Length: 582
Image (cartoon, rainbow, N blue to C red; front, side):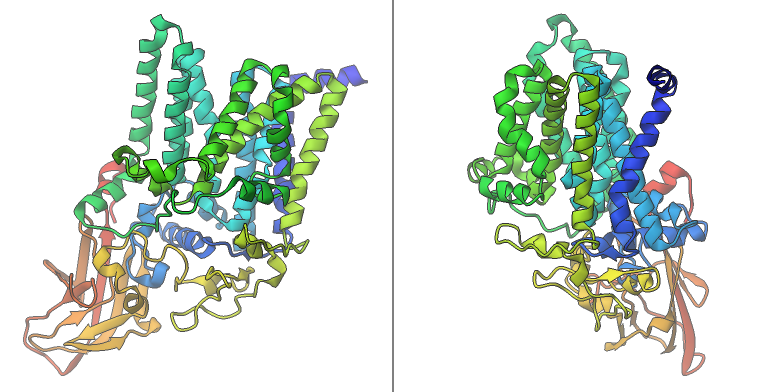
């Protein structure tokens, strides 16, 4: 009987492995899904607004979102085009068949599933061992850190996470194995670029360090050819990701934009005690990986060289993360000035997790070499990893607050208030004592999050002149002949990358109407006034608002007239690459 099952397993090994990974992914997300709520982290509203804008445009036949007219305060914010957005189509696409909450959590299931599958096959390329690959997939794919990404709703890092092992496995293949598999490096890096810019920067730097560290281990006569393949992979990654980074490059070269707030790594680096304290509480890298990191050194001689390199690489990464690294001495070096774009040191944790998981997989496979013991160890490790999901979901109250990790109060899901009212600029989403948004929503009150945005990132990638007046823009302050008034919500009619204002204003020569709509240099706009296209609409750059304005020059036909001004934006780069009009 056992031999028959083993024979069938070998015949359908790929199917069984993938089915098992899908079940594990479902189990990891299910504790959150069963609550039928999504819970705010630092960036929940920000990312859900991006998805909502994308969904509305897709429902109305527009495949690309250039500006936000239904979310992000309805001011024509181009943040939807400036942040990587490719993988958000997963969330938006699922909304066509599932409720908002179920779509989000099923997308989580798919991302965790992709993480497990990619981690397994990436390690299989390196180790040539199914057992080692299984261990790595579970240690990396079901780690506490990935569960924390679900909690903190940092979609960018979460969506980039699956591709990190593939990028390193691809580089390993080109450096030491089959150079014809350079496309694996391209797929890995491109997948990250489609998800998150700071993670892309971190991984590219880590890959460069990896290459330099192991450059000498390549055969001398093969180094040039292998380096050429790496160059080809890099060029293809840039070309394939042009649709993501191209628009922001055009906008950045056209004007000065506001950027996400950088966090200087040298100003407040985490101490080793902080990392230890968080991991002991099963946060950060988690308790399992912490034990492997602390006690793994005692077994270092029992693992193959690749496992040892992974362990030493994890120690180096931890050193870089901690306050032991001399950030205060090197941060002024020109080549390192841009490193602050990663915003926070915790974004380096996935690299640390990957190296510890790689070492742990070799160690477990070595220590539990017999099949029965190995399978039992695999089940135990998987079970311990899955406990994280139950601990951090609202099914179990977590109210642990420490000085070392003040974000812990965000993990007590049971205390977060329901957003039962429509958020407005004057009645905003509630905040916690850390000034972070603190709320939860279900399917019934999901739309209460939009269109007002008062969370993190609400000024990201606005023109600097507009960002200074974000409160006026959010409140729909309009200036008519020097007089300020606020536009009622009913007067706004959003469309695909467009926004129409239905207003009644005096029509006479010299009338000046300044609307709360952001103008980006580098974007093509079509502005219509009463159905007629305005050839050269004026902009109020440097005035109280940075917006589109119109000055009618014709003589008045009546004292007042209904005015419909329709503004539509389209990035020229999108037209060039995709062939789509606005």
